[in-house]
Image (cartoon, rainbow, N blue to C red; front, side):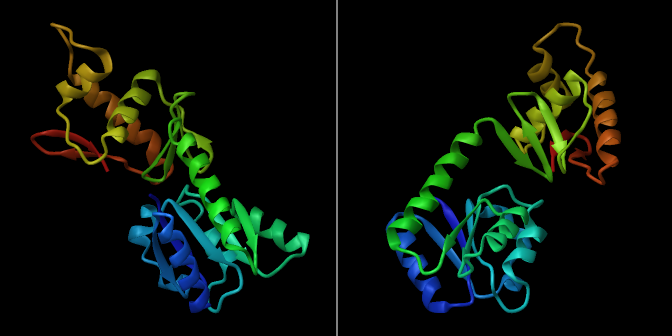
Length: 219
């Protein structure tokens, strides 16, 4: 089951989309205006269906606005069929488009294809706190800029990011990164985190929080 957001100014079409996708075991949230989005919940969605021509903020501008906030597939719903219009949608950050009017089977097939692809990619990619971890390459980037971390700094970031919200003692972080050693110098974790914060500050990001008297957690 996936959590899908559908935004279109046609209530009847939204009802049709909701009915079709919920029959396929998906959960669907519908909005008639992009301006009504709750940005605190924007990362809850596994896929977004987005109409291009809407009053207020149109689909293209909305896509540009949220593309750096979400990594889920965005599929445009459009009555426009000109190649230039389609290209503009893809350049703005869309992953695909469905031309109106569309058939039930096409909608289901497109949605499920993107969800399958997204599920496969998530094994190697982790998106959190405005950054992207390439778990295979052992790299982390912000807005497509790779942050130059040492091996230890990267391992600390990956460990905390994979356990987002959980608080860890310095000793726990050390043992998870380096393994247990009798004469471990746990203070090195504090120094690494100081360096990590310095490197991410260039992007106005501070992903590691200090929980005073306890340890650290990924924000």
